[in-house]
Image 1 (cartoon, rainbow over the protein chains, first blue to last red):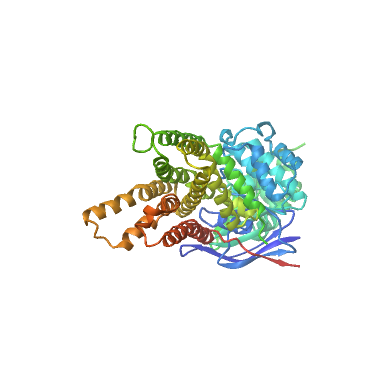
Image 2 (cartoon, each protein chain N blue to C red):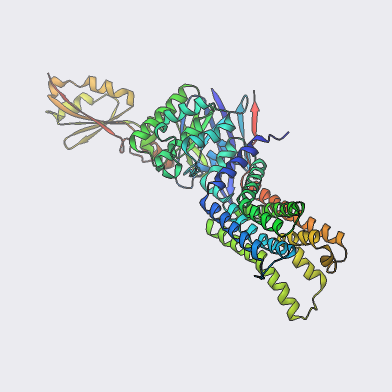
Length: 311
Length: 275
């Protein structure tokens, strides 16, 4: 269900247009990753969504009443003379969150053990966790996070996205920006690419990959009889490129299993199979180079390597 | 009707933050030490008994120097710090209005400054009462001091909101203190000496009364030494009106300019609600 919609948002600083007509729908229960180059206007867009900035043109339309917003700015410093618990208590006054909710939130983000420590002694990762705690406190309908995982260690990042997942399952809409495509891949349900002040593409990752026509690449190597392998693939309808030691097959993601099932291993002996699915990196590069024709699919894709043997 | 709670939450936060600051505690205690010295001996280091008037003049002048200094120390980072740390954005996202934010800051900082001055004020009161002054007179002095605190905090907020970085804001605050507390008096005296008094009245009066410290001094002198001041001004009423108006202007005008500045930088979006 659409929670809110950004309509034709235009914004500039000192005569320079940063956002040139952004249209974006935010769905409840989704995690939207906002991706773009430095200076693309991600932070500006998030500030507009958080209700901090008013664009020079455009509107923010809520389906129903105005949603409650939790916002975590980029590189937030908080108040070094307060403890984590005191910061949450202070912001809870504005949201009406109970003492129990504050304690539970601190516990959930992993700051319960340092709740009474002054923020001056917090590491950057701890401050980021506190930022998340503040943003999710008070049961917001929309959580807006500006590069929230900066400074978090790997377990912290995993836990961070688990918390977002839990909130999304409760119907909360989450919008976050990140430079790390590999980090948000598989963790956000939707992505939006911001380019030249406009949304170049938005939707679920799978849908966008399909829409972009990006194919998976299956590398088949080490066949006893390459001519047999080529013969098997003839007439399959898939794009096949012959390599020195095998073949590369380009096909849709959901056809990979069909290909693997069709390989007659009794004839081929054994095969080294590497599957490269198109990644968010590929999709992003494809979107950036949309006006160019040559995009090699699956080049950056993470490979899944298997060895298939006869018998 | 405007929700006053966010303003009060902010004011309380400011108060707690400032009273936890070692710098402000140390400066407050230094001011107390100065007050004890000046209250006991006066500015002139006169030997023997110093009269009530000497103590009074000394205290008025002491506040002229320490209140702006401490006030600017308390407020220089009030807006810039919140913007740099992203906390201003968080407040706005939580629905705190810019005016509530500004009013909360102003109340909290003014109260912080006044509380930081309490040790100093107690020593001043002790010296003043010991010199034969009346408690009611000291309360008038306190009232004037409160007005000065408010004006200085307004100026501090103004400087903090218009500066782009900490080094600029610190330089501007130190410069403002030098100009207001020292340079203006110095220029007036130099002008009078250089021209042997042939300076237009409006210029001298404007320079003396036109700044918050001058209007504070005039308000205090008008209350405690009306005859002497009357000799310089046309009437006592003119002086009262001028000093009060200038003081009010120095409290309100920087606040309005700060509000304008914040409205230029931050204009929260208005949501359209569609069923």
